[in-house]
Amino acid sequence: WAVEERSTGRLVGRAGTHRPPRPDWPGLEVGWTFHPEVWGRGYATEAGRASVDWAFASHDVGELVSVILPSNAPSQAVARRLGFELREERVLSHFPSERHGIWVLPRATGS
Image (cartoon, rainbow, N blue to C red; front, top):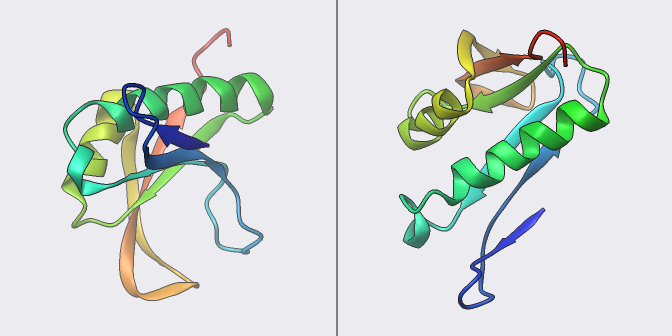
């Protein structure tokens, strides 16, 4: 989804789900990316929460993932706020030069 700043209508980022057709992709991903100018305003957490809620309501999956570079501390902080935990770090075939953190959020019991 495109994310617009409510007060200005300006496009400030995007968020949502992603599952590329790659054999080593870890699952249905929730992701976010925002212009650095708006970092720290809660947009990523708000959009990430909406994405998580929509993904679990719309897909029969036991867990969601978020693929985050180990150097991306702000996105790791958002993932933690959303309840994701780091499962592992590994190299993915489409980006062989760096390891990525595979963050996981299990579906809540009873959901």
